Image: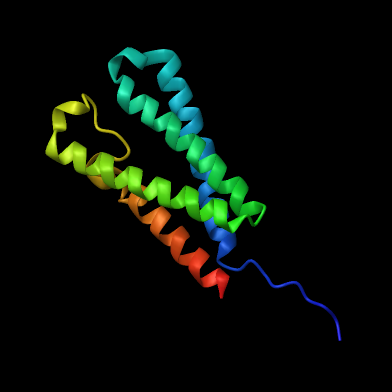
Length: 127
């Protein structure tokens, strides 16, 4: 009888999505901060924070530190909900629409759906 390691399955999709978002959010935010920070300092700072959260989530998922991944995804979800609610309640806070404005409507709600999908997968992986 051979000892098979349990596959990562749909976790590969979660890791790949977070890796793509980590790279794209970090590069985009770095460009925004270095080239046009004065246009929307809060939005661009939040974008950089999101990139860092995506990096941490990706590393935690790859290393199978599920407690850290779970904590990171909850942080991300709460942040998206707070910023989304603020962007609706007080639209003048953000001079430009952000990734999270209106809960990510301009990005197909991916900023809201991604942490929910990741948390769902983590819950299933625990079983």
